[in-house]
Image 1: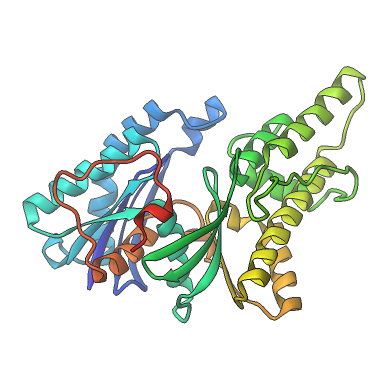
Image 2 (image 1 turned 90 degrees about the vertical axis):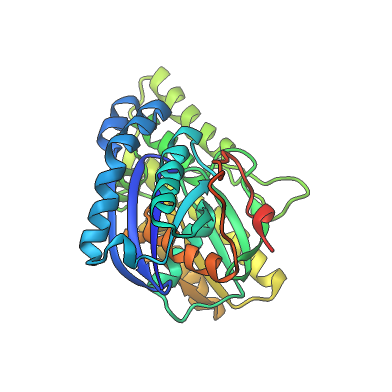
Length: 338
């Protein structure tokens, strides 16, 4: 079964063709990073306009690269939630047009479920149940994946997402947007013990995250030093921040693994590309006998292959949509589980 996937939830316009939920025949991504970098973050109106300009190109090229015609596609999967509403609507309306003209089924895919599914592409042996840590620019979740289409959110951020925290800290110490890759690179040359940063906790919710205090601590550190005319080594700040982030993510995730008595962990989302986080989890999982699954770097960020992959499992579960499908800016995984 060949699924055409379409992703436009934020600032990547993407299309892909995936066969049987595992084999990627094409994966085309048009990035807007260079333009949004001018503003230090994603501008929703600009993102929506660029999706309009790029979507026809990425869909057509995904079919060309896969060497298939639209007639050979069995269904069209599209991200419908969560995300920037204007951006989502571009992909949804394009997908609905394709389905109307070709009489193909339309599959609505949850963006976070797509990130989780990116691991099925890299690891064909990964099967539910397992625990998944989803860390990206907009999301930080600990999810119990009970079935391919059934999820239970164990923990989530109460304020900033992990990727958002990376970007804001990066901007504070003088790096460009998106800041995650610059923090990762600088941390390799810095002293991770140079600065003591807080490990915020949420009272009464031992699996939930809070990154706002960590971000604020770095901002105050930099601003106070600046007021005193003290120069701080930004590589040391990056290393200390990244180590603290790793400690928080690892400790809460491993606590959930212990309490739920599971032995398989997957990590997904754009922040899962961070080398420090990958190394920290690799070491901790090896020490505790936990099977760890990480997506290939090219499937960590937003892409359509993951949407087509999850679309395959949603289709098998009978999840299709009519042509009145609408975008939803915020929607928990809990709300879509069977």
